Length: 230
Image (cartoon, rainbow, N blue to C red; front, top):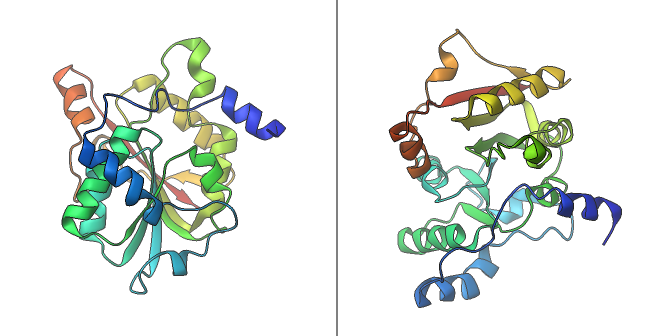
C-alpha cells in the first residue's frame, strides 16, 4: 500500500460497508450486474465510451445512499451520464435493483473510496458533482474524516467544467459552516447564492430522501449549496 493509500485508509470518509444480510436476489445482482456497471479505475476514464452515445454531458454523485436522488436525476436527464459512488453494499444493492427493473442505462457505479475515482476522471469533464448529506462525523476528533477538505475540493474542482456545479446538502449547521469556510479558501470554487434565502431551498426537481425526511421529523433543517467552478 502506497503512502497516499495508507493516508486515505486512515481517514476513511465512510463507516460500515455492510448492513443487514442481502436477500438472495440482491446478492445475485451484486454478483452479476455490478461487474457490468462498475467503473474501473485502472486508467483515466473515457466517459464517451463509458455511456450510451446519446449522453452529451456527465455528472457524479458521491455517496448516493438509498439512491433516490441519483435515480431521479437519471430518469429526468437521459442525455446525461451519471456515475454513482457508494461503498455501502446494501445501498448499492437497492440501486442495482432499480436499474434492472426500470432498464436505466445512463448510470455507472463505483463501490469504493470516491477519491480513487476522482483521480481517474479527466479534468474539466463533469457538468455537476453532488455530495448530499455526507456523514457529518460530529465529534471533534472525527472531523478529519469529513469528506470536505481543501484537498477534496481541489479534486472536485479539477474534474468540473468551467461554470460546472458542485451541489452540497447537509442538515448539520456546523458542517454547513465548515464547508463554506473551505470553499472560501478555494481558488476555483465560488458560492453561487443569488439571495440570502437561496441556500434554504432545494434545487428544481428535488426528491426528498429518506434521510432528509428523518432529519426534518427530528427538527433539523437542511441547507442546499451550489458552488460554481471558475
